[in-house]
Image 1: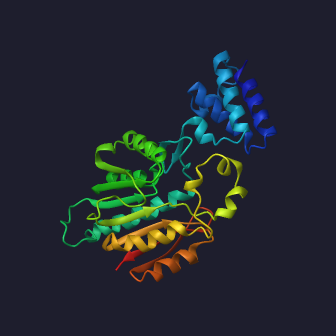
Image 2: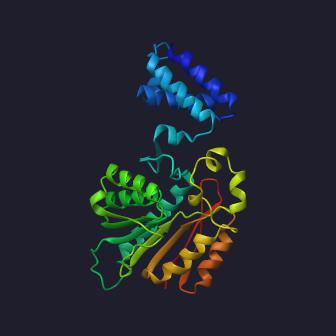
Length: 299
């Protein structure tokens, strides 16, 4: 079978299954199993395809037609200019979460320029950063990579309550050269050592209202881990905990940054203000112009 024929066949399977952009997704599968860049794939339409590759691509297409997330099939996904290992049992990184990384980078750089949030620490001390509900670790790792590239020393900690998610975070720490420079704990939001003080806490917690999860696209509702999605009856269960509990763990002048639903900005701002220990950071909008990240400076 020629490459163009296989591309057409796989695209047809995906189109019949209601998959958006079937030709593009078919090309992604072909490029993955042929180990080719997309540009090279399109440049070789008459290339014969080995029967084993045809078999593998066909099996993968059947999974995608059943709405298995593409990232699970490929075993990785792009985020903030980096590539992260991903698979069943961990939330697939979303482009909107890149706004959390970008905002956190600006905040961290500001803290570094003005000195660490903890005035008693040396000015050259690494920034103490915690990525809670880390999942793949994409937020904390992307942030740490950017800060290190900018010349800012970082001490990164990641926590997740799910051992399966933490295993992906570990793989991604190794992939991006941070395994020796970061600490990963299987924990419910916070590391066990209560003596630690944070300059910056970032989190993309579960924030979807429980009743809405069955209505999500099947890639999410059928395959992604419910615990990484379910924010309780109002979607604010974990956000409520974070705003309350982070105040005791942030250094004075430190910052809490939270991703949330596009319709939750006012509720999250109210939680931050109700804690009485933060100066509110106005919501930052995502690529679609919707409020996506809110936070507060610890007084």
